[in-house]
Length: 397
Ligand SMILES: Cc1ncc(COP(=O)(O)O)c(C=O)c1O
Image (cartoon, rainbow, N blue to C red; front, side, top):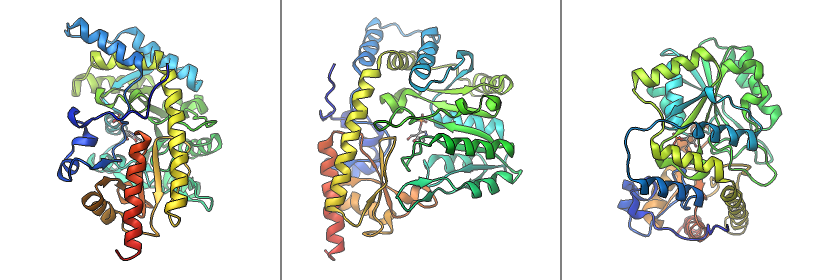
């Protein structure tokens, strides 16, 4: 079927984090949010149908996780990513962030270093610090062509410190928009494993890809190192199911998996996805492909529009090429180097909510992160407000 991603759906009545948080409520009903990474689109019809049928049944006693859930996850990864996952290795987590936190608790001691690659998804640094571990930055480098690259010499140095036990890899990378190439992932793995650094690969954005771009699941490159890799995936970003709080943590190492399951079941008393989360995830992976194809086409078109808009209306800004994710990363430093202050003023005066680059750590200042997963009409309006604000600033108002 043909999906209509142009359709504007009012989310204000649904207690959405994006539309109903304190900032949004404070600045008036015309405020447009481009921040937190969920989408303003309705889900694929097979997901809606499966949920409706389960709700219609109307008995919601304790549930077990059906085998069909695990085979849907495995089927998706075999078909779409050429990764044969043993269903036994799929562990539950109520979100990727939660999974990373549990893993840090199991893999590190207080004071140990955890390597990340800023500017990067800001929750990593927060959760590492909150767990009493040390954030070790291996900053990305912005190449002359405007694309981000990993700094392997710096990584080798950080990995060689025996106190640094784990690396959290963001693949594809939010917000740098990179879908890492095979040679990059191989080099990263070689450095980490040579130094006994465990890799947690957060691949939550792995289905949101531009035309012709292929994501490589990290463990497929290192079968011999499978016990030093854990991969976190979820249907939540791909299919807009964040409200169900359901992710898969793929742990090949039997001992670590057993410790993880014990932690989940005995320490924090979690047993598996909720019944509705399992229904939504199963339908998504089993029947969501057609919707995803159309979504990726829509996002591609929106990004093309954004690139044209930036070069025509904000010529001093630089849009970083985005191979994957629905998060655009826009360098506006020529207009406003202090993007934290800029974002506050944009919210209060122009009623648009972008996230400031500073939030994403080293190298983030001067950038805005723009969530483009909304109808193009909304993106157009938000960008028009941004451009008019920046140009007025430039002309001294
Ligand atoms: C790289 C990355 N990891 C994890 C998350 C959040 O995942 P979850 O909602 O499953 O905790 C996000 C959300 O934006 C993300 O970008």
